[in-house]
Amino acid sequence: MKLIDGKQISQDIVSELTTEVAELKGTKPCIAFIRVGEDPASVSYVRQKNRTAEKIGITPLLFELPETVTQEELFAKVEELNADKTVNGILIQSPLPKHLDEQAAFNLIDPNKDVDGFHVQNAGRVVQEDPDGFVSCTPAGIIEICKREGISLEGKHVVVIGRSLIVGKTFALLAMQKGPHANATVTVCHSRTKNLPEVVRAADVVVAAIGRPNFVTADMVKDGAVVIDVGINRVEDPSKKSGYRIVGDVDFAAVEPKASRITPVPGGVGPMTVAMLMKNTFKAYQLQSRS
Ligand code: GUN
Image (cartoon, rainbow, N blue to C red; front, side):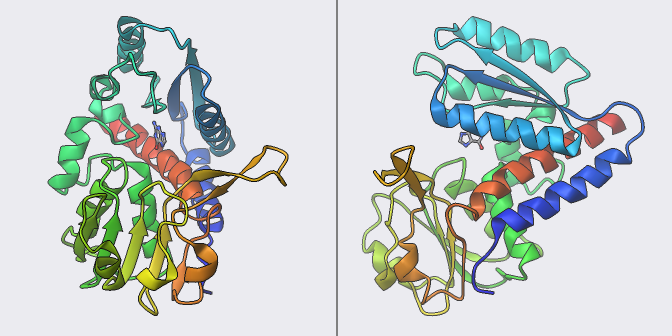
């Protein structure tokens, strides 16, 4: 099948984790979510993560802090959760309001509870290829898709569009690692790249993580390329009750006929992010039980 069903793959991971958690003796894994303010996308993402945790048997704790929370108050909450031995994973939903230093908050999380992989120490562990580190969930989810769908990156030219720490940069590091499900030759494109369409046309695998609807057009994609669309963009759609619909960074209708494999939006990479977060939480629990 050409279409990569990220929803199905994530459901497989959720059911595997459900079995593993059911087999645990004693306390169950626990993840704490911190959400600041009422940004509708953040409310929806955290609700989804909360629900999936519950389904698996991971205990979710939700801390909803007001938009006006001070940095000191936020940091105090993080430190309280760091000290709480019953909490295995901590996630601060991004973006935070502008008056808060987001990276400082991520760096305050105990790196062994940093299930988002945003702590500087975990970013460094990706560079050092340390298997005990936590890898940020979206790039880890793309590697997991490739593993489970038999898409080899070995020796392939992978072109990543976007250089964010959360996706593009981290995925580039993972794809170029030594070892199975990696060993790719990686090019990273971004807003300052010259001749971007030409660079993307040379790709065996395209990973679009730039945050612009329909950015990747058919003329940029080589026949037979694998296309991974990480975009989650809201575009106006009066025919929808909400007034918008979600599209990716790829012009799906035009690119799909050329691609050998392609992820849809929604239902591609998105659900994988939540599944990998749960996998990281289970890993945190296991690492903490060992020590
Ligand atoms: N906001 C958008 N994606 C993410 C994510 O993966 N983790 C967190 N904490 N916030 C996000």
